[in-house]
Image (cartoon, rainbow, N blue to C red; front, side, top):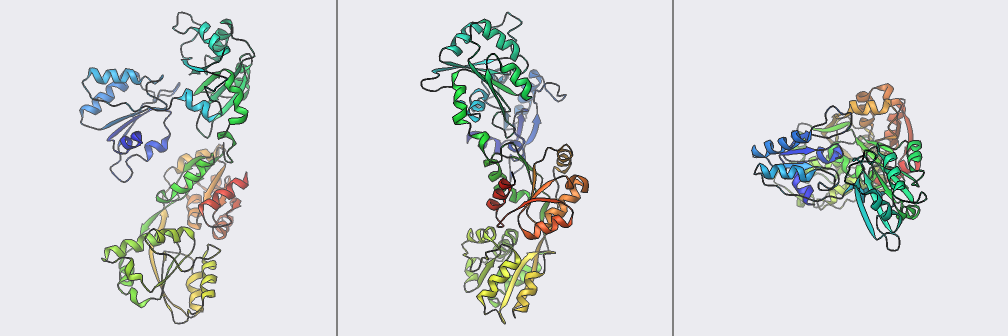
Length: 487
């Protein structure tokens, strides 16, 4: 919580390669976004920064009077060179604070179902860097002592050992570690792309090579590895290993992205559309004569949000809705109203315009009823036409339009072209059209779509796209369930 607080109030963030992009992308949301300085050190990455340059950058930013966050993966004081950077700040007379993290040697095994200590199996854990090549000699690591620990009730976790794993294993065996002691390599630990290879000390090198696991990696030696069969919770989640695209507008993507991550998916957000407010004169005029209406109808959360903004701008609140019945197309829209103290009178069983029309028809007594319908520009005319057939007088106010957004479209196109996307979620016909326009018809047709409902599915199939699954209800929970069923 302290880390999140500092990130949200930072003027500048200096971040490593292992920091998830969504952490820095969402920094300062709703306020002035911070400067972002990438200083990741990855083999072969031309953007890699030297340690001296990183320390100098921290000092320079601080001397400019900025609130600076140095964001690292894991814990800054465990093989993170955080101590060196703090020393540089001390020498430059720059005040600093350290927020501890969860180090990879603890977190990655936990996500792989391997506790590093366990009563009766391991009474100690030793963290050691594999970056110091044990085959070169003259290092500080006592591999004989580590072999003794791993073989007699201790756990040894080796960091940064992907390249030096053969030498690490050779040194442990030479130090007396028995070849049948369990071992596991965890690559990209805690991410949805996590890969775990379980073997023995004797076979771990060959098994890692066979499985294709690579850096970043930690390797665990010890008897708690055997508990993975019981405790491997993360990799058993329904969407583990799946890459899922969320095309909802940025303001609305959060709930769906969270639900997908909870099920183990790797989430890629590419907002296909964004909300553009239209001239508010029509809505303001309707609000000025709300007392003339018997019904208020909403078919989206966006319509609710914009209506409420204009209601408050007119110095009015929920009290003016007394005596007006309210209809909403589905639970999401109803929820947006409930947040504002309005319990809706009608929510259909089918969360589409046709379902809402059926529900209102069952209520009856719509003849001569005045209805205010707040909607999006270009919305289907099904609801208005149906209500007028039932004798209602309907004033349609278009409050907003969906326009193309497409941040991240180029990256998504590349991911689609190389087959790295499992599913693309779409929650409106406009999102389908924008998705095709943004990534191109060829890339779009390579995707497997999961749709929120019939209208969205129809738009996708009209565009020649593959719809792998459709939600039974127009809710985010139902959409995730449909995706899970798609496998």
